Length: 129
Image (cartoon, rainbow, N blue to C red; front, side):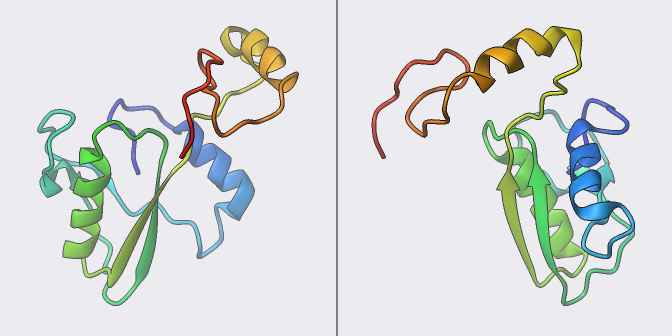
């Protein structure tokens, strides 16, 4: 999903490009930011696309889920462009371990094992599923 904050390239796009490959048919930038209707409001015109997606299945990748309005707006735009199905996956923010502001946090987190029941930001337990 394109950044509504104008990041170019977006860190998630860079990460997916390295993982999947920018030249792969499996990774394509299909959306661009359209009419800005404000965050947290469902509106398919929030995004634009020129792609003909008739009959295609699209996996929409987002880096943040707050209310779901951006992902739902993007999915609706993809469906209007002809996508047969749209699935959304949300990945947590990607940290550049070499970035000065993130390096100490990344070093600290790498010392801990992953735990589904612990918040990555405040390291406190948040119950069970």
